[in-house]
Length: 259
Image (tube, rainbow, N blue to C red):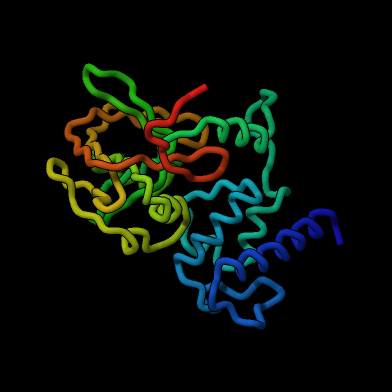
């Protein structure tokens, strides 16, 4: 067996163990080849989300929430994505830091967690978890978010020319995981309603604040798009924010003291 094949089998073995840990009702005779579809085994969307979250933490795999749901339909397809051999070199001629080193670098900068939402041309809601969010200017009030190029969420924003930024509360880890994973029925697992001004998806049970934004500009950078949004409406509720850093979620420690 080649080195690449051995690495893949090692990852596949670990995935079988992880699936048993996150799936309370797993069958005793879980297929050893990993080619059976998870749906045929009875794995539901939330179990898949839990599995992908564990794989991301252990193998430093970055999932694209807008991948088609069948992109990770079996343990083998997940193993291929998580295998160290799946990370190729950067595309430009510059010398870059390795992907693992870069991910570790950025994980050392904890941020709040948001779900960016919009409405597609088919009038269905779209959304993706986003931690790449910052304020740009106060006059006019403008923020920016970064989204995967070609994603259905970015496509909806481009079509509608507006989007909502749902800032998640400390109890919304499950929502963050759902909208960061390639599952087909994300909005079926959360409570949401249209915002007042723009009619955009507001995750009312999971967001401590929501901003309605009109697109003010877009810039393509590598495999992502930077989207500028002028804030045209906002709702702020009580609660503490959800944070993400060091590849794990945590809650804001109100009243903490620094050293």
